[in-house]
Length: 339
Image 1: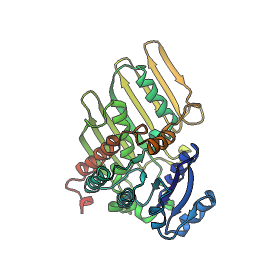
Image 2: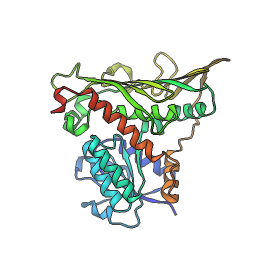
Image 3: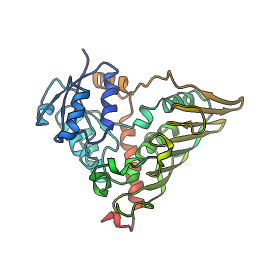
């Protein structure tokens, strides 16, 4: 029998990707809750098999539902996730899973008390074929031991399409908490540690949007683990002329070579997405990722059924957010964003 899942909170469009990755693996989408009609209407048209419920307790108290997704407003996700776990159900949250270190501490306590799975869908890893392929290459020793990573996460802001909460610092959590959490998870993954990493430095700024004082449009951080260092830059400065929402890149430096990912576009190069370049002792190689399997959805379903941790270790889900939240706090010391 396929697992049954539901959704609470549709405020970020990532919810469509979260639903789709489970549907691909045969899971059954049965219900969703959203108080916003403008979000619920197109969602219901896309997924007519899922009934809309007016009260989320109809989902929380349904014993047949095993897993609940959320992509609510960012500062509301932690509370929703804890409520889901306290009702004996597993969680897949959009990133970031929470917006403060205090919320992180509460979530960790509830997860430990309930024993439920708390997974964060870091889609720039789990739903990006080139990143998954790079993980397999690194695991196979293609570039030796990883010693450094550079993660770039530029995004297009599209001001006229963003809701008010997007510009409200307490509600979206800051740029390093939001976009930067993707990069923190990838740093942990490629450096080979789920727990032993720290933030060395971090900055945030609003360089080009004075009419949106709560917005941070650029940020960066330096990370360190026992054997690896990393640099991250995220921003909202992608120009309209690029042709896609961001030129996301990841470079993984090893002792015997390096890998560069041009995840969403290869500017002035080949069309399409998921461009992977490998440089090793034998030469330079462009590797196709077209047939790369994306295992996260299948693995998470297996974890729900078997109470395992194959999709992502629980500690990494929390540690990635700890790094992002710590960097955010470090970057904001002495700034108006603390107020």
